Image 1 (spheres, rainbow, N blue to C red):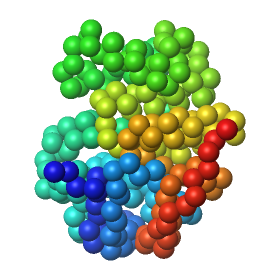
Image 2 (cartoon, rainbow, N blue to C red; image 1 turned 120 degrees about the vertical axis):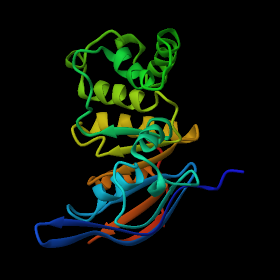
Image 3 (cartoon, rainbow, N blue to C red; image 1 turned 30 degrees about the vertical axis):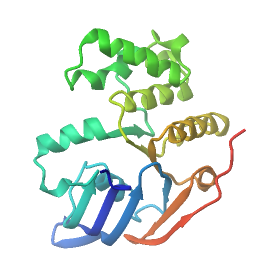
Image 4 (cartoon, rainbow, N blue to C red; image 1 turned 90 degrees about the vertical axis):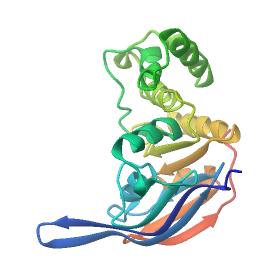
Length: 235
């Protein structure tokens, strides 16, 4: 039986060493993220948001403590096993899109499936379905440079969905977009969340937090607020 928590951090600390100086990026973090949560992680620059994202996404390991993803302690896994988990369980969305410029929209979305041994026919079928889900079927053969910022981010979200992960981590996903386009991206995240995806959003934009269900505020490497909020509907 699956736990209600998809991600759990127990007494997690992250210390970086710069020369002879130790920097406590995160201090004694205890956190449970439930399946189906839609969370915004907020806080000033240098507060520990990116460090938290890297740990939750299994991109980095803690200095102390334990991190569980779907009941498995990722601190005990080899790098190859971590890579497999990242590919299967987590989809990443970045502010700068990180699309391959020489691949068109459908090829960018299909790319992560190659690393999991999925054949071309099945890859392209799945990518077609995802393009429809992110409302980009009509742009499937366009290169990133031929797409608008909002369209590129939709392709990036589609790529994150390629291996049907339970969790989507989005780092400033509207940072390079105008307000209207950004709201369109938030609406897409809301729709994905309703379909059961756990969404974790890191943002400086406090206007976006009214569209999520929970807000986690970090300051000086510590969680200073963790609360449910009233979720507004995007018109």
